[in-house]
Image (tube, rainbow, N blue to C red; front, side):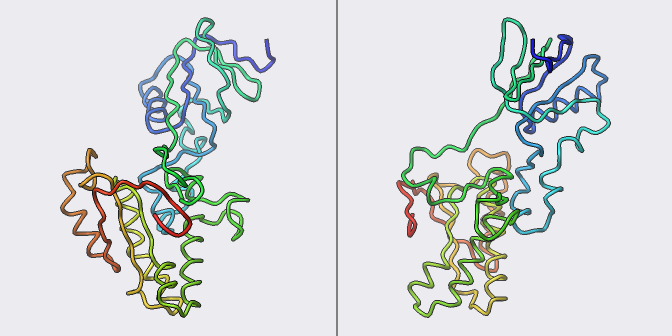
Amino acid sequence: MNSRTNHSAHQTVILGGGFAELFTAIHLSKKGYSQPVVLIDTEERFTFKPLLYELLSEELSRNQVLPPFEKLLHGSGVKFVQDQVQAIDLPNRGVELAKGGRYAYNHLVLALGSVAGDFGIEGVNENTFPFRSGKNAIALKNHLRSGKNAIALKNHLRNRLKQATRTPDPQQRRYLLTVAVIGAGPAGVELAATLGDLLPHWYSEMGGNPEEIRLVLMNRGSQILKGDINRHMRPSARTALKKRSVPVEFLLGASVSAFTPQRV
């Protein structure tokens, strides 16, 4: 066996660090669970997805939206391991990790989450910014040339606004100042509302006319927040979007078929 094998079979191993997994670990700790608990995730930090848009707007800091697991689990007795699951040995009750470690378990909680789907739409990966995780919101070293640890989406938008202030052609400027948010679930609605206030503020600071900005919220369904727990807030959400510094336009019942660098 590998020297890093954890031999205790009388422990609970939780795979994944989303809401369900983290709250399971904390719940077991608070209930005085008798077995050791190990939480394993590939990321160092937990992503509080409902507040990603406030990371973009800088209303909240990185540590508030993306707190380290070690800090969240401090004092709980839960052991955190940052690694990737390589294999699960169900017959022998063990989890193999990419770095060579192995954790035996008595109980296994398996909730590794999901990945953003592109629905097979042409040009999604090449021409859009996903907004689903901490990595989506924060630029990594090689993600944008604008600098290490800058906010990716924010830098992209500000660069477009700055370019628009130097563009005399009205049609080209309109292209630079048009922003589309695809998907009218809670993340899309919150992001659109945030941009409806941020973009005109940024553009005005640069000497541009904020009335030139166009923000469109697109959704293949005919309703925003459909199926969401907050769907009862649909009327107030629509009103709030219309009352932004730049009113958000709605394009509902529109299925996106392709993305290009110039258009949806």
